[in-house]
Amino acid sequence: MLRRVLSLASGRIAAGILTFIVLLAVLGPLLAPHDPLEGGVDVLAAPSGSHWLGTDYLGRDVLSRLLDGSRVSVLGSVQVALVALVAGVIPGILSVYLGTVFEWFTLRLADTLIALPFLVFAVAVTALLGNGIPQAMLTVGILISPLFYRVSRAATLSVARSPYVEAAIISGASIGWVVRRHVWVKVLPPIAVALANTAGVGFVVVSSLTFLGIGVQPPAPTWGGVLAADLGYLSFRPWAPLVPTALIMATVWACNLLADAIRDVSGEAGRALLNSRAVRRRHVHS
Amino acid sequence: MSLLEISDLHVHYRRRTGRLHALRGVDLSIGAGETVGVIGETGSGKSTLARAVLGLLPVSRGRIVIDGEDVTRFNQRQWRSFRRRGVVQYVFQDPLRSLDPDLTIEESLTEPLRLQGRRDSPNHLLERVRLDESLLTRLPAELSGGQRQRVAVARALAAEPRLILLDEPVSALDSANRVRVLELLKELRDAGTALLFISHDLGSVAGIADRIAVLHQGELVEDGPTRQVVTEPRHDYTKLLISSVPTLRKVVPA
Image (cartoon, rainbow over the protein chains, first blue to last red):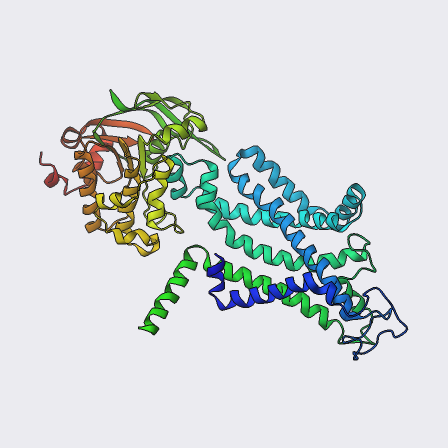
């Protein structure tokens, strides 16, 4: 699968950007030229030799804050996406197979999660599990999971009654066999697209929770937090939000590009596409 | 002893508007190596009959005995182990959807072999339906309708079944492919595999079936040797069916 994704130009670009982002997350805090929490008298300064991206409203070095915050931002959105994936996809596929009671129960649970006010749920989880980044990510992940539940359920339903699945059942296949062999391939592409979108939403939500004092605590930097701080001082540094925005956008865009590439190479359409490319290449060489 | 023994079979569908009585007391038996045609119009309960025999539908009343085993009240686990013995197989009506579009022909044909715990390759199966081995690496989308239906027959043969249920196996095919698939089914019949051939078209069944049963609104209205059903139909509906097939007298001279 990975090899097929990388055979597409869009797949290579997405992988390149995401590798860069991951490197940033791993090495970022080490590369920061200044202490990201140390303020100074020189507030809201323009870019200079010592502060490449200037300073914020407390005189802290913006570049250092972005580099230092990359780890929490990336880990946060990955956690959100993974929680949503596990909490949504598994019940989504199983809801088709485990009988009407399980189906009814999970459907109503998904409806409830969609209808639940985000703030109330976040505050309740914080009260229950204490304040911290994992708890915040868990909250957001669970609130997004109905998306994955719906997407995987719809994809599973579309193949569950198809003749080839029934042919497998008539030959003695178990539910596990049918899911592994027939259903999974059909569920994967829409899931990949939803996952890419969620990773993007994760960045924004991680920062919005900071306002509430949930998850990342205010002095600690995140990309979203830097963006929020910059937005408050637009009249002094109008260009400043562009930098964290560009980082977030590049990551979200790369995620979406990757999702498109996965969708393009998986399934029937994907094989046809790759075959036609291979045929074209053979024609060019011969 | 009969290979398939259906007695007083009732099947209901639950609909929003109430229950639909799809099969009303059907009695049918198929001996080993026998070919039985089940004729009926759309909605007469032909496919329901096949799906009930395969355990894909719950039975309301009656008994289904396959190869000496009463499968009527089987649970999922019992069905699974029974199905892995490969006594009964099914060929679907629609060759476009009966093969997984994401699996190569080889993968589709290997599936029933692996489910039976066998490790052999599926090459010999393609040979039996007269398809070239080079098709193994293709996807269903790269095959014609007739080729796909023959692959579906090959997949049914993988389990070496003693009974194959064929649900309108030639209805979606053009006449040349129809003849090819029918030839294939005749070979199977001659090799001793019992066939339950479901169709709305008396013409395609009469040439191959030993016996013909006519299903009308969920009831079996006629059941007898092909020649007798065609020449001396007893039920009005059968008479109507025969009069609607003008070329039939040439196929089976009276």
